[in-house]
Amino acid sequence: MSRALRLAIVGCGAIVEYGYLVAARAVAGLDVTALVDIDMARAERLARQFAVPTVLTDLRRLPQDVGGVLIAVPHHLHAPMAVECLQRGLAVLVEKPLALTAAGAQEVVETARRQGVVLQAAQTYRFCRGAQAVKRVLEDGWLGSLQSVHVEGNFADTLPLASGFCWNREHAGGGILMDVGTLVLDLLAWWLGKLDVVEYYDDSLGGVEAECDLRLVARRPEGSVPVRVRMSRLRPLHDWVVLRGRQFSLRYGLQAKQGEVQLQVGDDGEYAFALDGGRQSTLDLFAEQLRSFKAAAAAGEPVSDAEAAVRVLELIETCYGRRRSLGYPWLPAGLLALAGR
Image 1 (tube, rainbow, N blue to C red):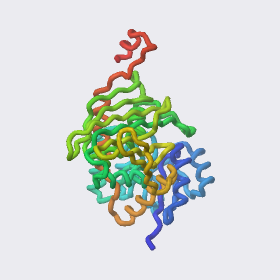
Image 2 (image 1 turned 90 degrees about the vertical axis):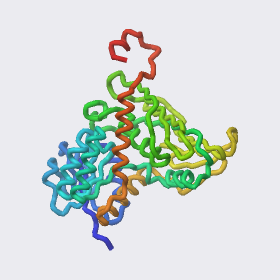
Image 3 (image 1 turned 180 degrees about the vertical axis):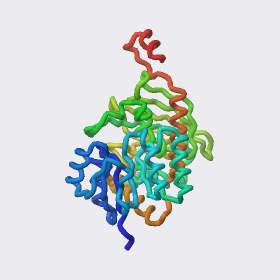
Image 4 (image 1 turned 180 degrees about the horizontal axis):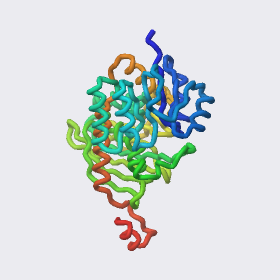
C-alpha cells in the first residue's frame, strides 16, 4: 500500500468547510494534518470539528512531514503561495483560478516544472462521470458533425461566505467568469479543443460581474463551431449544456442536474435516451479531485493539465479586454456614461 499523503489546507473559507474537509474523509490514504488561516479562531473551530491536529497562521511553519498542500485562499494569493510551496518541494493543488493572470499562472507552471514537483489545478468538472461520457461521445463521433454548443449556467451562491473577497475585483480578479467560469471554460476546452473569443458582455459596471454572456468559436476538425455561454448568479437559467450535431444532439446537466446526459434524435425530438453513470454530488467531485491529487503526489507525476488553466485565463483576459455592457434599460444613459460603459 502507498504511504498516506499528509495534506495541509491553506485557507479555511466556505469551500474548505463545506467542501474539501468533508470530501477528504472519503479519500483513503489522505490525512488532513494542518490548517492554515490568518483567522486562528475559525481555523481552530474547523480543526476541532474535523479532528485536524495542527493549526497555523503562517504557511512557512508547516510541519516537515506535510507532503502536499491545497491552496484555497482569496484568488490574488493563489499564485504567490503556490510558487512558495512548489519551491519548497511540496505537491500543490490550487483552487480555481490558478492565478489572476495568464502570466501569473504560467509562472506557477514553470516553477513546478523547474522544481520537478506535482502541480494540479482545480478542474473539478472533469471528474464528473457524465462529463467523461460526453468527451467519449464527441471523440467517437456519435453526434456527427458538431453544429453548435449552447451553455446556460445557474450559479447562485448558496453557501455562507467566510469573507467578502469575491466582491473585491482586486482580490478576486473578476466575478462569475473568473470564478465558476474557469471551470465551465475548462470543461468546454477539454471537450471541444481550441476556443477563440468573438464577443463578451457582462453587468459589471466596473465592479465584479454577476452575469455574463460569451460568444466563442471552437476550432474543430469539421470547421468552426459557434459556442454561446450564459452564466448568472441572479436569475434562473436552464442549467444545461446543449451540443447539437448533424445526427444527434446531446444535453448535459450543470449544477442541479449535474452530470445528467441525454441524447435527442432530430431537432424536435424528446431527450429520451440517457447515459447514466451514477449521480455524483459536488462533494463526490471534490473527493475524486483529492484522490487524483493523492495519486499524482505518490507517483511524482501530475495528472491534471495545468497548462490548460493558463489557456483558460488567456480566454478570460481576452473577454475582459473586450467587455461590453449587457444593457440596463432601467438606468439613464448619463449614469452609464459616468460608469464608462
